[in-house]
Length: 264
Image 1 (spheres, helix red, strand yellow):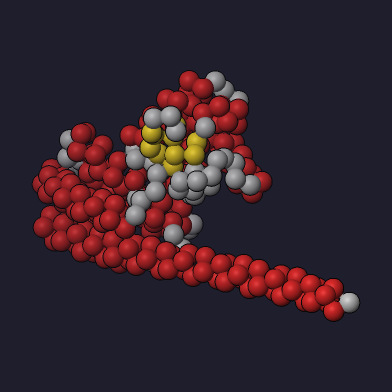
Image 2 (image 1 turned 135 degrees about the horizontal axis):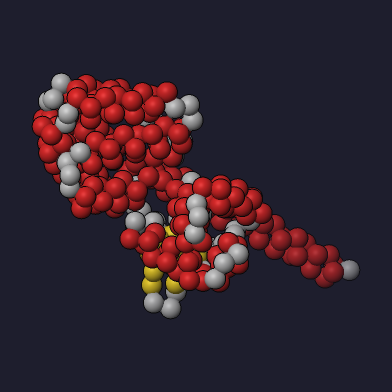
């Protein structure tokens, strides 16, 4: 478990994120919250990193009060967790955690789709058409992810159920980091098939498409985490083997020196 900032590179990334947050937010708490959320989602603050309030306050040039309030908000979003006498830490999600989140998303988002589709007006559909085009036309990966979130949350907001939408948004936020992993291939055809069903007013087809896609993504993430764990174990084994070989060479060198001294 590391403390921040871990390196000059990390500090430079955080400085850029903070500068962007300062340009787009007004209060100290808004700046801290926006910057830290972005830093966690982009792994500038990686899973397992300890977040010391005094260092964060120094980094943001503010008191500990807005830092503490931002950390509490991030804890609600599932991005950090706190423990007595240990403070806050960036959360780490394992494969089981992510699979559970997707199971819950299938239930809640499926329910939202079934509620929203019968309520949609022509104007609502036109708004979604515009947002869908923005999602398709977005150039960078981060821009596509942001446009996708706006599209889906707008759709779910048409239910008129704010608590439901907040729960969905929180779950989507929890696993947003995993969607930035380079080995996870996104499926634009899923979003097209999903929106085609929405256009047709076929809620059940949209829910079926959503569920099959989420199950596939959960499997891909589990596979990625398994491969990453195996790679980490192999790296540790290699480092251990190198250390053992170095120690053996050192002993052989010392033994040769002892033999020469004895012969002399």
